[in-house]
Image (cartoon, rainbow, N blue to C red; front, side):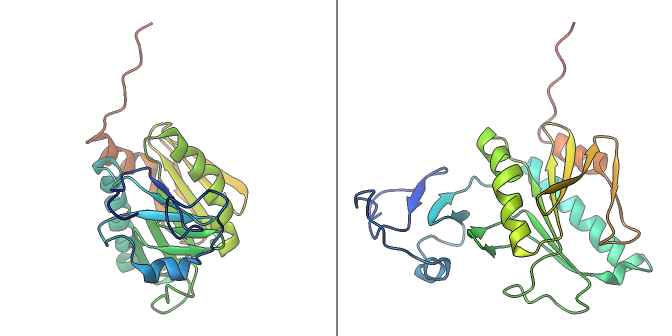
Length: 216
């Protein structure tokens, strides 16, 4: 690694002690050791999957905008709704250790604990991902991460796709709901909370307006 800059999309095999080792080298490095090694600064986003470290692109305003609005709606529900106390907390860009490695979902939500979550021990009730622009990211969000979060004990996985103008809700490996652009989602995990998907899309569209359909 020394002297070689890492850019978005770089994949580093942590099974090898050096990037120049032959591909057949297999020196395992658990996620905990990778975290302790502090290979990257705090300003670098990365995920670990099956011993591979992947540098992730920085989130765009079209992702941060709706994520911030979702946080506002959640905290307003907690503070103002009679049943809002069921929401323990919500955090953005939170590192999670999964059975396959390390993930940094856009938002996590804890419910029904009745206390401040212990992040290392309490799996979130809900994990939220805002789909990024690359095709490979879409495939990973829909397939790989769904399985990982289910194994971790996450009850619901929300995939908010501004490109396809839909929200997909997974419970385990089952797609439980597909919310269209003008739809509203309600979850039993947050009784009385309603999420109009369009309210989030408008914050994404401010920074990345959807393409106009081609004229017939």
